[in-house]
Image (tube, rainbow, N blue to C red):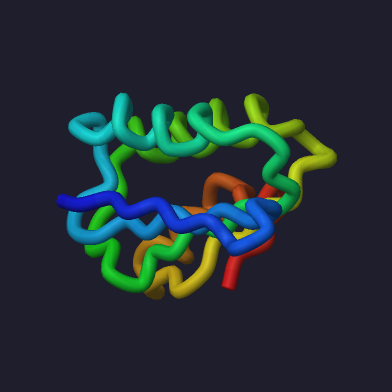
Length: 100
């Protein structure tokens, strides 16, 4: 499991790339990634290399969403594999997040 954070040059967009397992083991690292920057307007969670998400990861996304603005937050979750996309749909995360 690895997590990488990348900021745009003007610091308005943060990309968090998650590789391997998205689970409770990265909770602190995930939280530190988004709490460490101020003034970010758009967040991208890149799941191109994410193989699996457990229920804790879904909870972490909800906490993240609330922290960065709730309904007004601009969050894109991209490169989601088909299995995880099905889980997002079943949990109605597609109503709370932009997912591609």
